[in-house]
Length: 352
Image (cartoon, rainbow, N blue to C red; front, side):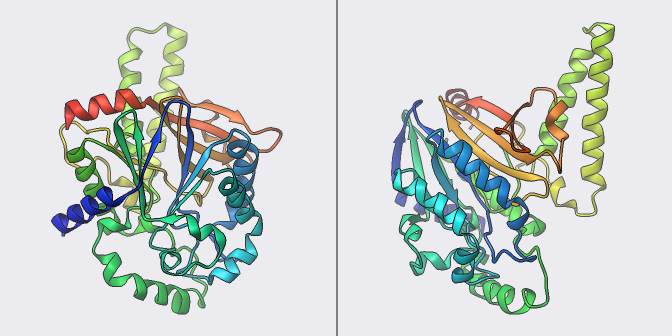
């Protein structure tokens, strides 16, 4: 299965259209929006106002190119007519990006039907993957379901089962791909392919944000180790602050491991002695407290978390995390990770 997935990715990579970008370009990548019918079974509904404000008041105003990286419409559960009717404001925003020449739409497994049938004008932007050529280096963007043979074998069955069995009985979160352990094969295959090709790959599909191949658990552990290294060389007052941060990060790690759902504990799953910083994942728009995305601008790449301060205040006192309010709304933008593309590609070439 692994060899089949890598061959499939190689073909997808070679067939993908190439877009040249420079340090002047501004790009934002969202995946796994799962637009539904606006009802209680619609996973998107809780973050709908956040997402609308973020698109309209931030990315449109700043002239970003919007890349929608799969699973935009939740066609496993709802008909496209209901989705379009329920979220006219969101589709209108997509259309504004398109009219400005700034929309790229990639299909995933949950909206795969749109690849075969064009239901509305935005579908004309549909493609399976793209490559961004940054000064000679390649950023490969695809949803991620292609890494598994199960998609071809069972996608129609999954769609039928979701729409006609789970949906009528009120089952809500069938779109949360991260609950299926087999989905972590997506990351393993994606990592091996990107490392071998010496490229950056940006996925969605698993709903798990990744930055430079590191998960949240990896990042928390790295933060704790760095803080311990600072502890002995700090003043008394600063030591107290460092100890508080260590305790805070440890509590967050404990919370992840104490969670009955153990899927988030798949840390460093690639089994490399040194991780090659080649795999990124934009997470999802339908998180419990907010939405994550990937930004590329000024030659840098960022992992961004947009959140509603009425539901979460976690990142206001995080060391090294910059938080800024969006106008007078309760919505905030947190920069979780940042690195230069030149630095990332240099490390990829040396470590692969």
